[in-house]
Image (cartoon, rainbow, N blue to C red):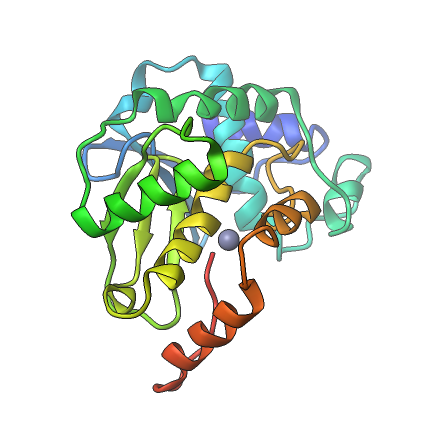
Length: 235
Ligand SMILES: [Zn+2]
C-alpha cells in the first residue's frame, strides 16, 4: 500500500480510497518542506529528499496533516469515521500527527543556518534581548518582496523569518514589531495541541500585547501599506 493511501485509511478506516497517488522526492523544496496537490483524481505529494530516510510512521503523520488541508472543503461520504471530519469544528488528532509534530519541533535545531542580513540581524538581536531574555536561537533572516499583502512570515520548516522589503524604510520600532510577531510564532509554534490549532491563539495575542505602543504601530503599518490596493495581513 502506498503511504498516501495508508495515511488516508488510518484517518478514514471505512472509506474506500478513491484517488490515484504519487509521491516524489526532490531537492527543490526547502528544508523538510513538503506539499500536496489534489488535481482531478490524483493526489501528488512532493517531499524534500531529506524525508526519504525518515520513519514511515512520521511520514504518515505529515501526510495526514496535508490530507486534512486538501480534503477540508470537500465533504466526504457520511460514515462513522468521516463524521468528525465533515463537522469542520471538530479537531482531527491522530497518533501519527502527534509523532509528526514532535518530529518537526526539533527541525529548527538542525536546519541550516546561513541566511542573514545586517538590518534584520540587528532587529533580531534587539527583540531577542528585550522579549526573550536573549535566549532565542537565531532563525534564518531574509527579505521577501515588497509585498503589502504578506508583510512578514515565519516558516518553521526551515526556521526562517521573511519580511517584506517595504520595511527597509520606516522606523526600527515597526520592523522590530514585525520581528517580534514572527519570533512569537517560533516561540509558540508547538504550544497548540494539534496540527491545526489556532495560529494566533489567546496566549499568542497576550504576548503580542506586551509590545510597547502596539496599537499605534498597527496604525502606522496600515498607513505604510495603504498606498496601494490590497489586503492588510501578516502571518
Ligand atoms: Zn502571525
